[in-house]
Image (cartoon, rainbow, N blue to C red; front, side, top):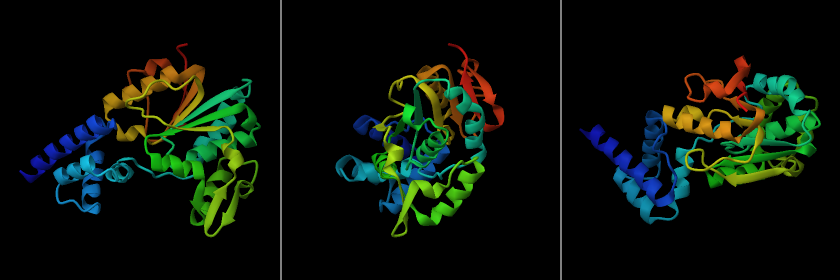
Length: 274
């Protein structure tokens, strides 16, 4: 009985979050969103989910705190180095044929993937002709991405990943150590547009040559995955590329026919229907 009541409270809170603030988590994978909401309820000090909803609606400070639980901010630089090596060796040669490029890092979180791609494009001589669009729905995450500051404790792992990606330089060329943190060079952000954008409620985002959205779709249900993939399809230029996470796929998607496998093992696809 308690579980059934809690499920009803969760549905009402997600509806309230959408109606009041236009953040739509109603089609996120149910087990994942439930786990994170219950964690938020406990750690924010509310006895019930209904009490958490009451706090959300009447305390302006509660929304950003709740968003930090509902949006997953776990990533690392050059995560899955073989993905970046595939981009470097198989996708970049195609991108080099364009005079200018647009790259969309969707769900950029704290910016680890954005800086990885920015460094890769610098190393391949494409930094000055590329505009990056880094988007997320979490304002705190976007601010962290804009700052580009990470714990030095993470740098050893990031450096190993960078080297495995086929690096042409040292990662240390791109940051300055400062009181236990690595501060990444602002030149990596000189052509970056940071923007609040929702894959659930917002529209097509310019015409991109590469979209990288990794480990975001796994939190969506099937309908929402299809909606996001349709958005990516419509945002890609002819023969543009889409990179997904290792556990994500276009298989079974309503938009699968619009893409061809480009590097199958790294979940890199190319739009073919334009």
